[in-house]
Structure formats: C-alpha cells, structure tokens
Image (tube, rainbow, N blue to C red):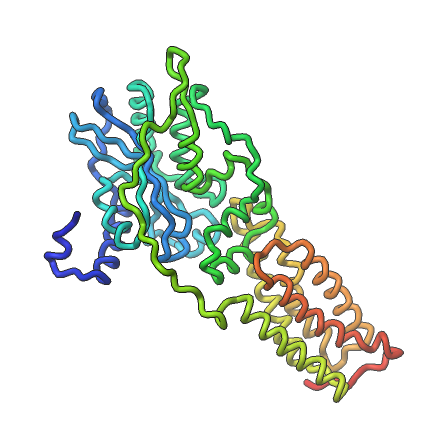
Length: 417
C-alpha cells in the first residue's frame, strides 16, 4: 500500500512525518467524496473502525473510532470521523484550554490514512455490523446530515462527547431498542480517571500533568456506557452486543471482527529512571527536607528564600488550575483537590508570612492552616504514583519548622533572607 511514497524517495522516518501531515491535511480539508441523497445498494456494508493507541503525543494515546461505509455498486468507500479540528483556528490555544475548540466530522477513504497508522505502529481493526438494509440507510443518512456544513461542528468534551462516543451514539440511535449491550449498565469498578491512567502509564509526565489538571468529576465511577468514551471500550462492548431482528431473533451486532493491521510488539523506551516524576520529586523532597532540618537543628535558621521559592511555585500552579476550572466548559477541571496543596493564595501570602516584619503569630497562622490543607490533600488526592504524597510532605517539613516558635515559648528562630 502506498508504494508510491517509497518510489518518490520518502524514507521511513520522513514517511511518518509526511503521512502525519497528510492526515492533518485530510482532516482540515475533509473529502469531497461524500455525496448526499444516495440510496445504498443491497451489497453495502457498514463497519466500525478502531485505531489503537499511539506513542506520538497525548492526542494519540487513547486511540480513535470511525464508521466506514463500503458500497461496491456505488464505488463508495467512506470513513466518517469525529476527530477533526483546525490548527489554524483563531485563538487556537485559548479555545483548546477552554474546551471550546470546535471539532467536526470529516469524511475520507481509509486508504488515505491507513499508511500513517501503519507507520506509527497503531493497530487497525474493523467490525462489520449486522445492520438491516433499512438501518444501514438510516445510519448513512444521519451521518450525511451530520456532515452538512451547518451540522459538522460539535463541542468536544473529553469524557462525555468525543470521537468514540459520537459513532457509538449514531449507531445506538439508528438501532433504537433493538440493540442490546449487556454491559451497558454494569459498573466497571473504575473511574474516568482510572481508565485514562491505564493508557498513560508509559507516559508518566503526561499522566502527571493531566491528573493535576482534572478535578473531582474524573473520580466518578463508570458503568459500561460511560467507559465507552474510549475507542477500545466501544470495540469490546460492541463485540458482546446483540441486535433484535424484525422476526424477534437475536443475532450478534458484530458479524465479523478482523484486524486490518496488527501493531508490532516492540520494546517501548521507558522514561529513564532519574527522569521519572516520582523519582525526581522524591529526590528533590529528600534534599529539601534534609537541608531544612539540618539548617534548623544546627543553626536554628529557617531560610525565607526557600519558602518563597517553593510556595510561590505552588501558588502559580494553583492560579493556573483555578483558571482552567473557571474557563473550561466541560466541568472536568472543577473541584480539584490538588488545589489544597497547590493553593493559589500562596502567591502572594507567602511574602506576607515571611516578611521581615512578620510576627510569630502571623507565621504560625499561615503555616498552620497550610499544614491542615496539606494533610487533607494527601487523603483526597487520586494522582497515581507518589507525587501527591512526596511533594506535600516536603512542604509539610517546611511548615513544621516554621511553626517551631509555638513549641518554644514563641521564641522565633533566627531567619535569613
């Protein structure tokens, strides 16, 4: 497939880049193959295409889902994808952060993107669906209507409305009550966050960043329906689904499940141990804790510059998380327990608490309240690994040392700027 790329002199490495650019171009410009008001022939077939997760970037980490229509009588082979967005959109970064970046339906031939998925070692699976001619036509018409310019855009929501849930919903709406998904209402024992982390375990810095940003809604337990925000879950649950025919007979929804391309099992380069966030924060935490305790025990000193540095970083990150909470429309960044140890008010309150005119009572009040918040955060946080424990413990050591006057008859230790 696509041997012309090789003939054109595009090597293995450049081929990946070329195909990625080709994919983006296809998504941006769409395809003019879609034609409206068509009647499918009896030989038409519809299938669900599931692309496996990739290692390129965060956007490829969870896979992708499309609906494919093939009708030899009409020389038709069209994929409907709900994963398109325009990199050239005005205020792209702001809209992306706010969750208001419009996504839209794209239509193209699978051969236009298959080479890219093969080169990036992402599996391609196709499930041919057991839909009646009437259901196939109804689904086709609905997708065509979605593809109209006035209907093409939609508001993407990470857990609730995305490139996997849209194809699922289109198929479910087409089949109505005749479609039975046995695991639909069955609890999975996992939250949205748990499912997400299953796909990010080999990308620890991405995993840390996303877990810091998302809030309490991500901890909601999922049933089979909610778990289908992931393409693999749509694939697996459709494999177990049945559909009731007009004569009342139940047949499998999936007529056949074949692998068009099997991702090769390759050794994945792990993050070097000393660059793993858990290791990085543990080492830094130990260094800061040892330095803090030794400085106080041997010299009776508490360094204001270190408190200002650490708590200013916390405050800055906290304000960023508050901003995400305020501007995002999908709600996933709201009620974030991470804000208990990344409290935004640390910036500027740390300067108020450590100023040269600060009294022992002022310092004790500030660091006492901070201590309580840090302890609560360690119980509420759901971030995998140890960052949400190690970092708060490091801050806790600083708080305890700063409150030592309480245990020494309010005698303030010598402080250095």
